[in-house]
Image (cartoon, rainbow, N blue to C red; front, side, top):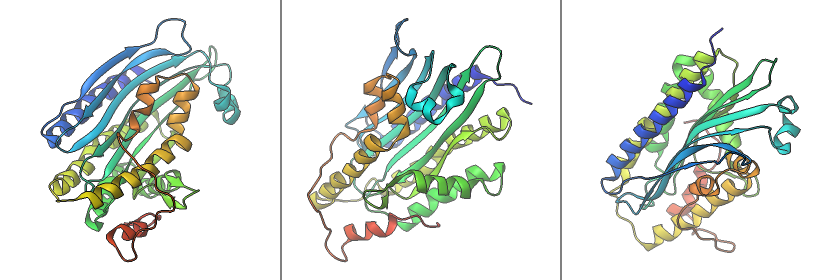
Length: 304
């Protein structure tokens, strides 16, 4: 049985944040991430701190953030223990890297990734721990070859960990990033997993390393391929309209957002995932057979 090593996880996450920021700054070619380090004072509801890094007004990215956080608490919120009663009476730690990038060009997809570790401890009892994470892609003007490349990279990430891992976590992603009130997926999916502890600690840790590092392997080539595509106001307005769906999911369904707000997390960091601009339009209907209408063909769970 491998030993739980919280410090090793933390150091990897800090390094991963650095790596991802460097690669995204390179593909942008203009803007840089600005860091906002924060910490909780003793006696607050949550302890710990983090490094929020935000990029604005780049050549490629209109806004995006790559956040590291490590928070501690004396007890889980009631909303969490209602679903996981075994966590009651335990102190906890949660750490992770979470990112969302909102490009300017409507032909470049929005992307999201997250890797995280959670542990709840109580004196005299075995710790309860798990990993979670994944990455997903939200195009506005999707290209089949981009979606296939995204999923092929995800499959390669998963391959060393079992023949069925990609399919399981791909299907989990399709289920999780789904807007039931719209009857559509948020995008074209990718990987999503939570409560990962069925393997030994070291194998679980290796998997989130592969997923965290696989994000840029999957995303950067797509950005490079599409960032110089010409577009006009029509594409821009459609992008802003579709960004509204992103807001709906993050504020209504996303478990990370809800957990952060319910535990008294840092609001600015939690809501970093919001796009800088978005719009809603009553009863919007794309023109029949238009490129905008074709997006609906991609917003269903499918094999790539």
